[in-house]
Every structure is written in C-alpha cells, then in structure tokens.
Length: 69
Image (cartoon, rainbow, N blue to C red; front, side):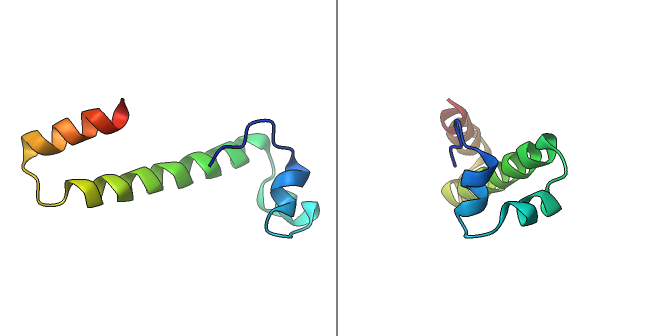
C-alpha cells in the first residue's frame, strides 16, 4: 500500500467513508502511520511464512535475506 502525498480526504473517500469517521478511528497522524505499518508488517509475515514453509533453517534465512533486500 503506497500512500505518497495522500490526503486524509483521499484515504477516507477510498472505502466511501466520511472524514469524520476516519478521525474517529485515528486521533493523531501517528495512529494512522502505525495502523498502516502494522498492516504492512502482518502482510510481510504472512507472505514470508507461506514462501518459507517446508524449508530448513538455512534456506529460510536465505529467503528472509532476499525478501529484505
């Protein structure tokens, strides 16, 4: 998810929700940042688990290193 130069109005309009509802869920800009960060982190963890299932430790470490590049 890339939100470069996105305005609150743009984000709130995406799922057709009013800006007031957006602010009801996110009191501060930091809250928005952490919500996006946590969502991306969860996605990365799921993707890594799927791609490394059945691999031994060395293969998993190699896959992790490649993923982080």
